[in-house]
Length: 143
Image 1 (cartoon, helix red, strand yellow):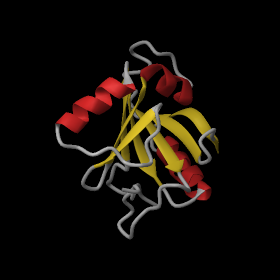
Image 2 (cartoon, rainbow, N blue to C red):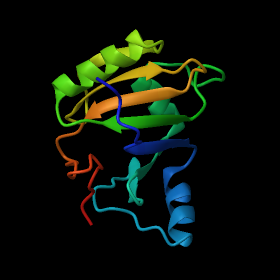
Image 3 (cartoon, helix red, strand yellow):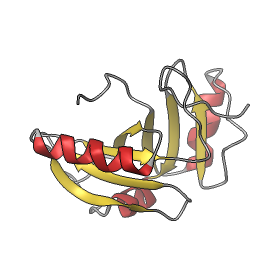
C-alpha cells in the first residue's frame, strides 16, 4: 500500500468564517452550495479549500487551540470508504505518523481520524458520503 500523492481538502482555521469567505470571493473564488454558515467550501483545481472556525477545527481534531499543538490548518485526504480511512491511518502511523484521533463516525455524517506528521502538521483522513470522489480520487463539490 502507498498513500496517493494528493491533498483532497485544505481547511483553514479562521477567526471569522464570513469575513474570510468574503475575502476569497473577492479573489474570484466561488463558494459551493455545500457551504453552511459555519463552514465554507471552495472548489479549487483538484483540491477543495475549506474555511472553518479555528476553535471548532481544533475541537474536531481533539487538540488545543494554541501553538504548537495546532497551527490553524489541517490537511485532508479523502477516501472512498470508512475501511479506507482505517487503512490509511494505520499505514501512516506505521510509517512514523502520530495518531491524534482514532478513526470514528463524526458529527457531520462521515467517518474520519487524524494523524500528525513528524512536524506536527495535522492530517484528517476522511470518508465523506456527501462529497463523491471522481475517477482520479479528487473531491467533487456541488455547484
